[in-house]
Length: 295
Image 1 (cartoon, one colour):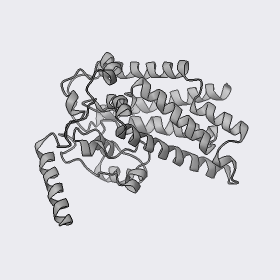
Image 2 (tube, rainbow, N blue to C red; image 1 turned 120 degrees about the vertical axis):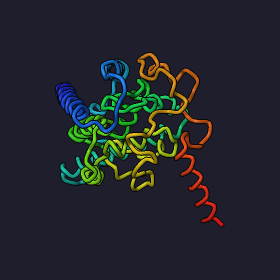
Image 3 (cartoon, one colour; image 1 turned 135 degrees about the vertical axis):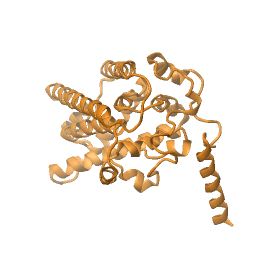
Image 4 (cartoon, rainbow, N blue to C red; image 1 turned 90 degrees about the vertical axis):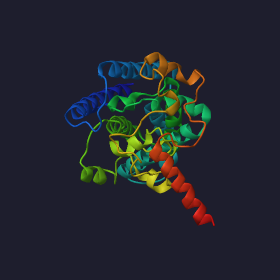
């Protein structure tokens, strides 16, 4: 119980610190002009985060930290049956858990029922740090179950899980932030961290861009599995964000965020065609190139 209480304090402290830092950077050096004020947007997203936290505490007796403590006590998991230094086991666990989250993210895009939950995150028409909190409650609960299962299979220690959770929360706030990084710094960070410009591509209305750059923390999985896109087709300051079918929906309302998976529309365009002129041109170029290679 003491371990889980300490975990909550550490996670809450790091969350608040990173959120305030991102809010300051978004004010001083915004990447995009975001119309409208932030007050209602932040209030809705923070309210959603509070609902999700409460639901997780009340509905799920198992958390990733508890799973780690149980696995450690009973000797479950791969890292408990090999003899390696503790520091190396922590590094392996953190990297492996990040791979599991990457795989989960791809899965939530690929499976229609799971996409209905995840589309709530993508429906946001602008990005800021609080978009990193915008996940449907059912997705949060499923993610906790998947994460806990991964922890048990790996035999990740409680320390490794805590490090991973703090990193994941911090990088989710960072890579959704509306922050303008110098080009050289963005390229340097992309060697080991998902940057705001890299992740913004993932929130494009153009489906091939939405289905790319799945990483939240480490960018390596996108490089390794061929899901990486360096830049969007439109400039970052002009690209359209969100989901095409929801461009006129009240996506910023808390009631809509909670109800969206059950309202009918799936958020996926019925066609793979791009939704703006330059996207159409690139799509045509890609088809032409494919035809010429195949002939």
